[in-house]
Image 1 (tube, helix red, strand yellow):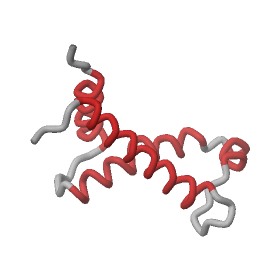
Image 2: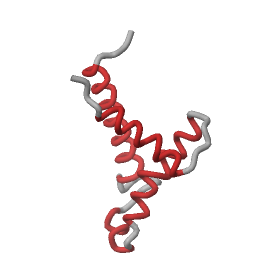
Image 3: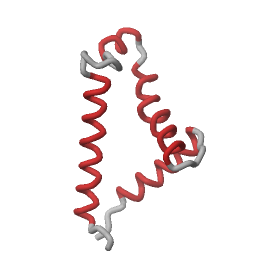
Image 4: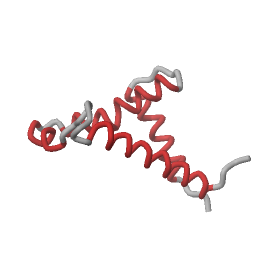
Length: 92
């Protein structure tokens, strides 16, 4: 049985909340072993590197490992663009 649009949006929202919480708890809490400081990134001017890792490196690695499809950043960007189109293309 296929999920309707509202159910799919809820699934997406729940994934989003969980991933944001994991990032918050794992990287941005000062007590975390993997703490990342935004103020230090601003001072050292490494925000572009951080967002490259968050937007490109991590999703590409995750996709390649869990889908077992070894892709590079550009290949994954093409996949991500298809997903953006798929999920922004609202059916009326």
